[in-house]
Length: 393
Image 1 (tube, rainbow, N blue to C red):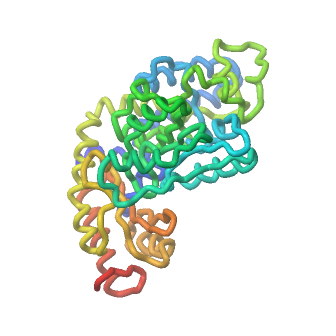
Image 2: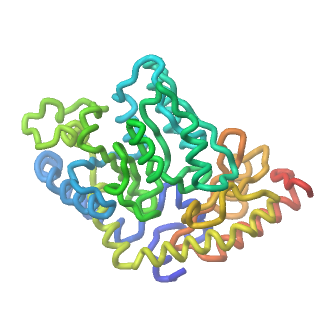
Image 3: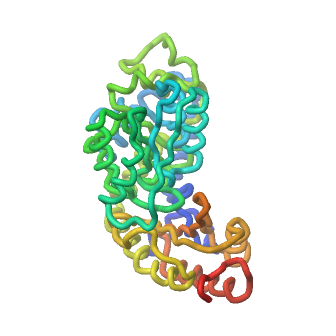
């Protein structure tokens, strides 16, 4: 990778950081810009929060809207994380007893819990449709998913890129089919912005949630909720504050309800504009392409070492800048800590139902040496401990 780009990140130099997917990492120019906004806040907090902040946020939302192809910036509101956005949707979503929300069985655990909680309160059903792994074709995946539709299905909830399994799912086709069935479409795009070429205005999607602090590299706590105008009335305020019956309402009740929620430092939201500039200045499509190539080129080495098989075709249709390798271990948490404490490797060992995956992420600061260090560490652990079971050996 470009060594100049590697130097732009604040990450510890002694760590092989292969877990960009969890919380991202912010380059120095973006972080400096973020801190500049914090200084503006502290220099005059009343003006920042009570007066000027609305315009600051509007400017930042306009830049984000252009980047992710949303036609109207006022259909976007900043939130601290995608789980917060999913809570806004799930808490207010109109459900009656017996109604169903259809999802896959490979969704993010926090979102599973959110839907399970609110569906349980309303005596509705959060239906986690079984997805057969390994995936063979897009058509088969779509057929598996929609086999879960019943007359009681009210909405589909699906990841654009899954967390534990790191799969890019065919959300465009899924949303189109769902709309043809008159279902509300909700996409968890936590990993999508700056990871795939996201064009929300080309998706038949009602709600889309995404993180800016992951692949966009904004500071932690910068995410968004997109809601199509026709479903914005569903979104009752998760936090009732000054935006309800606002003394100075904007033209958007959606923004008033979810942007005006009391005192907070929204400098991370404003730094999103610098994230976009940073990517433009550094030809990020070329950087991302190199990262994807590294992900795929090294994957066969780990399948061979661990004695496991891919869970999807090894192609850019399913795999982006991160990949999940099945791994046999009875103690995933111990293995994760061993890799960090003894080998200085930051990588998640993730549970998904009864399966366990090792997920590595690649971004501009990574090099082949990081994956070589991982391969060497796993080889030693296999040879000297019982932490990893290699089937057939």
